[in-house]
Length: 532
Image (cartoon, rainbow, N blue to C red; front, side):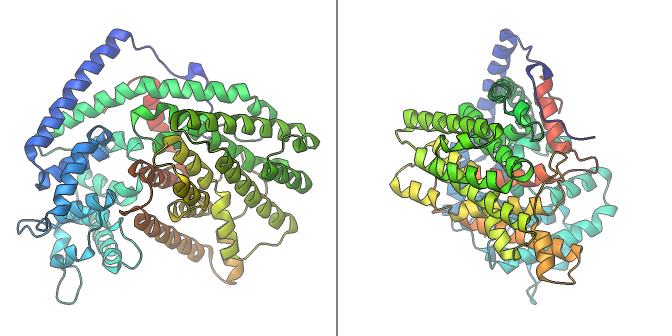
């Protein structure tokens, strides 16, 4: 049974009365105040403060506490004794390391030296510390290139956790399995909340406060998300593109989830709706190249997009004409909104990014039309562009409007490392072939196929292992790009990270070609209630 991602306004309930909303708002504000008081009482330099921050992030409510979280982490970073507390255990050190690096603070890996033996290996007695091993595994996900100790930490912790899982009770085994499958740094927390809470046991007094706040926050955000989905659905229906291109993907709800992952702050509702529009065209134009167009038509279309010449598109089939016209309307609309709000007209940058995408799609179309696959390296270089990630991130940059100036715009136009790393993660995940989209049946390529062609005799299993290693290496580059100082705002940096985090959820289909975690999350939003 295929996943259904189309949505009309009748698919969910919106029946909360104003009195209920007001009551929720009052309770929510009260719990927010209570949580802030608890965090303030705990203090900045304690392990408990870090544990509370970790829980806030996993519950997806950390955006309410950005100032408080920054104050705690900055205090811990500036304190030279933060990693030398004699009572610190493996879990405390690992969590402090991870939280600081997640916020862009560089922490050297030698903080783990105290847990190694004379031969430089992690001490064997750590195998009994399940919580510490989970913390170490989570910390290892923040590695950058050349940090061998974190590679060793990942191997050491995952081997012991996998080996010992059969000796744990059901609850512990489930938590360990979840940690190994979905480490926090590489997962979109907003979409994992219910799964996390299902296994959440709070040993601290503030756990219940945060639990209640998370429930209230989820219910508070529902009306906002429901309104966004209605707006996106109406916009998509009004374009008429789903009727015109019946064999293209028609999944506005799925497309909007990328935007929900990128912009986690509830106040970014308008940005989420606007970002979904170019994301939908990435999928649509991909299908035009993959399923619909002849090579001649695709060449003319690409030339028209490069010149941004609507008149030139008149020579093309009707479905391409209306697609280009709708793309022009969306691009102009976003450019106008950015100019009105932030004082910068991004039209040239937006058009340039669409031209670059179509150029990359055309390169692929020519490869597959000729029957000649490129070298794997050449395929991937082009595939990073044809992933469409740079299109989404360029639009995200301008919609946020942070630090827009000539220098930052030139940087964004040149497809910087933070974008290419994110794009490589998506391209390689997609090419693993775990997500055989039921609506795609055209000319499509794969890094795995190109890699096996370059290396005769290589098995599919070996090729897939190589791709998984390349995904890991791309994450290391992305982690480095996100460390301070970097030229982008913290919100944009986190948006890029969130896009990368979303990839594994978007491409981890089960045996029935479904995305169960995302489906469960969307059902809870659309049903109008949440049960933790």
